[in-house]
Amino acid sequence: MGWQVQAFPEYGAERRGAPMRSYVRISDGPIRLRSAIEHPDVVIVLDPSLIETENVLAGLPEGGVVIVNSPKNPQEVSDIIGGANYKVCTVDASAISVDTIGREMPNTPMLGALAKVHELLDLDTTLHAVEKQLSEKLPPAVVEGNKQAIQRAYEEVQVA
Image 1 (spheres, one colour):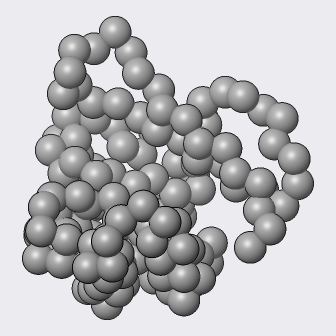
Image 2 (cartoon, rainbow, N blue to C red; image 1 turned 180 degrees about the vertical axis):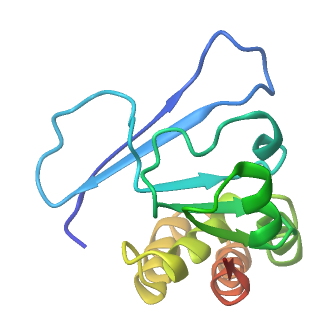
């Protein structure tokens, strides 16, 4: 789509399995800033246990989008995180990935959820990009499973 993209994780001194953050910046022009994102437009929570222990809304402006990998409905998650002033969305990305990919990999279906609830991505472009990237490294059945995961999450994501 002609974007400039910057992605990086943020690890602390935590031991393995501790919560971590990852950031993605997307811009039409060069990205010169090299710091954590303090005021995101979208927060994606891959591990549903984090909504109980972390402030997942930190820095997100009111009206911002929160997408949580959870079998709970958006209102239940909103009640837990205090998300009354946010667009809270849920999708059971873990279950979808097990069904379509054969193992728990919630990141792929979360792309489908993002495509549904935010204007940043559209479904066709997302499916095409994933097919292009994965087909260089993975067997066709795995690529197809990932595409199915994205499609299902797009269809199944719930919005508060």
